[in-house]
Amino acid sequence: MASRKHARVDEPAVEFNDLPLQSSVGYQLRMANRAMQRYLQSQIEPHGVTLGMWYFLRALWQEDGLTQRELSQRIGTMEPTTLSALAAMERSGLVTRERDGTDRRKLNVRLTPKGHALKKNLIPCAEHVIDRATIGFAPEDKARFLGYLAAVQRNFGGNCATAEEVD
Image 1 (cartoon, rainbow, N blue to C red):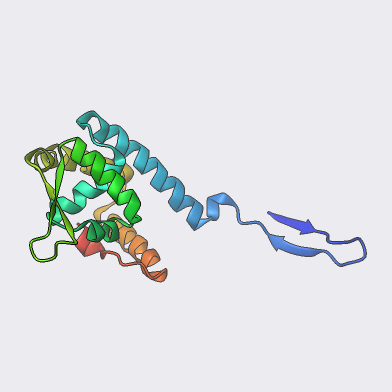
Image 2 (image 1 turned 90 degrees about the vertical axis):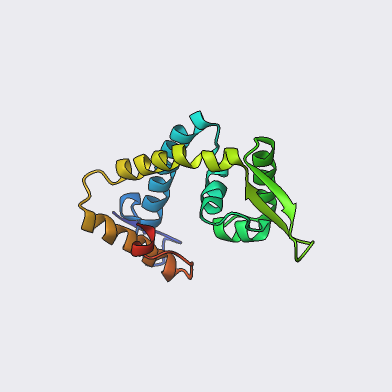
């Protein structure tokens, strides 16, 4: 939809195209992400896990014992946010923080048995969310879609997994 902008009556009109929300990649990514986050939250909350905790659990299930800084980098959060989330997870009995054996300045985050046990319940929840988000996608379309999302991240200099690494 084109619109006109008039600076003054005696200047020529400058035409520009609006960026309709339905054709804005950024807007569509944001809205899709928000919808998935809300749905994921509804699936994991009955297990006593918040959305904020979820990302840290995922990272620790892949590599237990990461430092707080490594977790911040993997999750993409600022360190104060990470510290708050880890404190809540510690209070919930999901993780412990202990001094690194070789560098006493570092704190390693380790899953407790309770934190490990959540994996068997929460990974199926996440798989359900992904299945719901991709209803009607053929396997090759889903792989292509993941590739497109990874390309968007690479275009902005983000480190991301390839479609093959995600599956």
